[in-house]
Length: 247
Ligand SMILES: [Fe+2]
Ligand SMILES: [Fe+2]
Image (cartoon, rainbow, N blue to C red):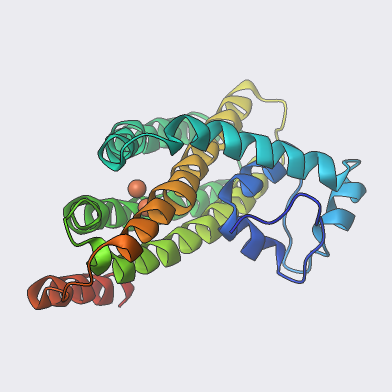
């Protein structure tokens, strides 16, 4: 559920709010606002950077609206095809492009922080490739099946992995700040920072579109579908995949 733009403060941690609304993470970073462990509420963090919190929240609202509205009335198969074409298929190439930009900036970077950044990127690659495969091979076929009630557990598992991805993106951003702090005006560093910001935004759009539109619509469809028994073999397969992924 989206957090109301009329509520700039919340008892939730800011990172938890970004996990619920991934585009908030990229919006904060676009304004040069870093989320620290001991960060206060969104309002005080924004104001410390000269930004009214409601302005930021309105930006996030508008970005979410622009992303989801064209697909709200489209059939689920068309929405899934869009997710596959726009986000799944280009994933490896987008990561390669970002890694190449990071490597090109290595002369102007802090070596240890850059290594940490590239290691985090490799971790993101491994986790996301597994996540995308689970969606393509198990979840999306279940969502489109005649008895989509079986997909509820899988949807929740994917949402938890999305939250982990937001946390990893946050860690990645911090590593990039450390890696490039010494040469902010270097052109290769500027290119790498731009590539990272674009990749983060693109990945956050992917997470938002699934969490707030595809999965939300699939859950509604599951509630409306006849309550058929969960196929035992499919359930074992799914739970095994989740266990493997988390061990
Ligand atoms: Fe996906
Ligand atoms: Fe996903």
